Image (cartoon, rainbow, N blue to C red; front, side, top):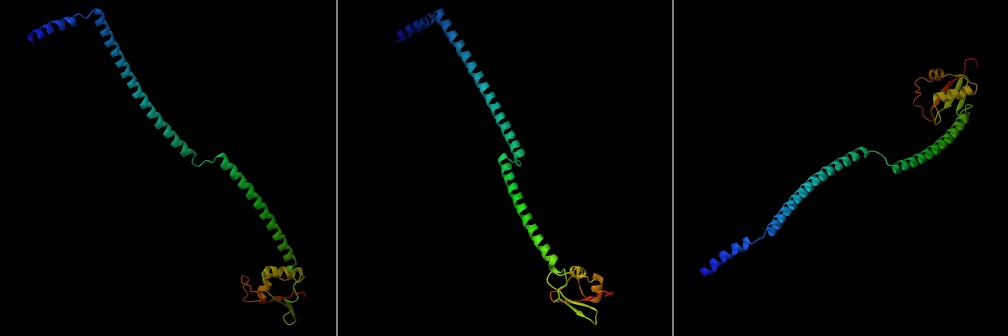
Length: 190
């Protein structure tokens, strides 16, 4: 067996030495290509890592911009919101005009009723007393001393607010009661 081993040890190096220059050059070329490919792969991996890092930075920037945009536009209205608001304003204006018309009609009716309310002192509320030289007036709903003075003046009986207050001591003009009787003095020239 030792003969085989010695024979093999002589043959193997000889076999290995028989590599030709072409095989050596092909091996070296393969190793060189392998090294270039390895370097190219490393370059690609480094480029990929740099691009990944840049993509992450851009994602952060986009998120910040979205947050800023949301913060800025948080209170702003869209075209749809503005259109709805315009429709509601038109509706509100129509309602306001209808209310205005109703108010004017009611004021007109009220004005007409006030015009005829005390154009002449009502005979059932006024009684003449010769001894006192004046008139007794019974307070009705909505009466004020100013309205009563105006009604008597319109009827040709010239009287002032002060004269009525003087003729009715203790009369509180701010708390007239329906059915309360007050004295309206006759003008001194009558």
